[in-house]
Amino acid sequence: MKTHVIFGITAVVLIIAFVVGSSYYKGKQSEKFGFMAQENAELFVRDHSQTLGSDDAKVYLIEFMDPACETCAAFSSFVKQMMDANPGKIKLVIRYAPFHDGADYFVKILEAAKKQGKYWETLAVMYGSQRYWASHRNPQPQKIWQFLPKAGVDVEQIRRDMNDPAIAKLIDQDLADAKTLNVRKTPGFFANGKPLQNFGYQQLQQLVQSELNANYPN
Amino acid sequence: MTQSNKKSLSWNILFLCWLVASVSTMGSLFFSYVMGFAPCVLCWYQRIFLFPLVLILAVGLFPLDRNVVKYAFPLAIAGWLTAAYHNLLYAGIIPESIQPCSQGVSCTEEYIKLFGFLSIPMLSLLSFTTIISLLIILYRRTSK
Figure (tube, rainbow over the protein chains, first blue to last red):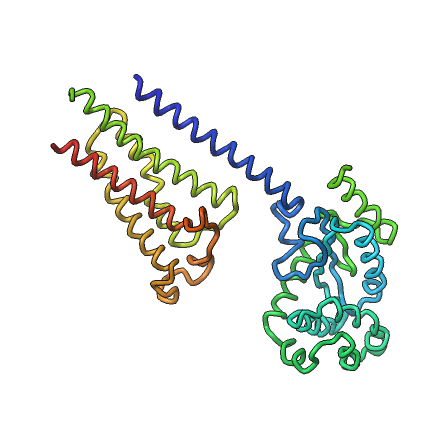
């Protein structure tokens, strides 16, 4: 029967078109987003996450950090150097893991500063003044306020914005993701979803370099 | 026109109708499983009315059975009404606050805009409209 043939061929063509279309689309997506096309990518990068670097970068360096963590402060300039050495190829994603007691206080300030477009300035001031307010024996979180004007932020506005429940929710989300990804110490680094297995400057450099080599073969 | 020619034209119309339903079904599956858009509640209702059409219309093709119009029509109408409602909501003519999908995926979130105006609810309305038109044409031809 001729009609059966027409029907059969059409059905097969439709199914093939669907399968080919799917794999074509997925290929395009993974080309475009690299590791971001992976199913669990949102565990690493949420919509609210602060990022630094080009959107076209193929290496996502995810850092779970705590503004009160000394090692995070120490690593920040190292990370910047790596980014400067590979312009446009690395995108830094900041996630929060405020494990120190009361550290979410600083995350709230940071997120409030983000609303004023002074995120990185504020983070730099925090890291720079950390030793004055983040002492382990005698933490004095209130001392941060005297340093904040250096970041060029409206301090009163920050006091109003920092208690936004959306910020608390975002911290909870980040902490939940940190738990899922088994981040127990800060800074916790991932390059394109691959965890930094052994901690150290050298090891981080190697991890990032291997992702750079994989994504930029030439 | 001979009897067999007439019959083959009817078959072609029904076949076209089935093709529209199949392409729409695949398109909707593509949006949700390949592109990863979560379907909202209203989209689900439209799918409920669309997916069975693929099978019902196919059954009506072998052998050509004009009664298929009777079975397919209610589904197509129900789908069309849901799609029309969805479009009104999407365009903001009906406020979202009075509609039922308050949790989960918003029915008014814009995912795609093909050629600058074709949204997903609009695609759905277009395919239900085409299906209904073809069914009406088929019904008129065969009832003469």
